[in-house]
Amino acid sequence: MADNHNDGGHGDSVASWTAVIIIMIAFTIGTFALWFNQPGVVVGSAVLAVLGVVAGIVLARMGYGVKSQNNSH
Image 1 (tube, rainbow, N blue to C red):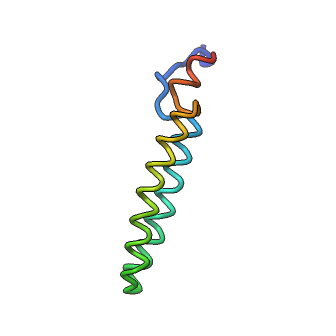
Image 2 (tube, rainbow, N blue to C red; image 1 turned 90 degrees about the horizontal axis):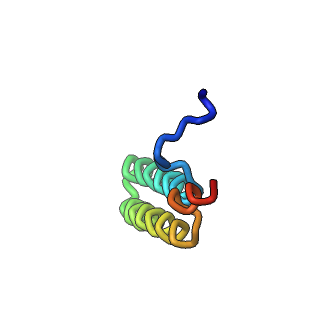
Image 3 (tube, helix red, strand yellow; image 1 turned 180 degrees about the vertical axis):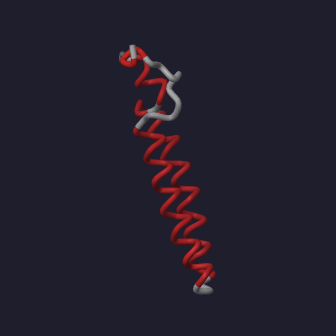
């Protein structure tokens, strides 16, 4: 019964995990940079967070998103 569980594709894809990991790393770096008063690194981490979103979108369009993976089952 548990094997038939389908949550509707709630972010379980390569694209979403990649985006989330990049964004989490960016926020971690940004937090420490803010703590150590490094404004250039804070801005760089904000750019990295935006690139994480872009990476997720690009990977989803390349077929690594939730919709692509749900159609293959």
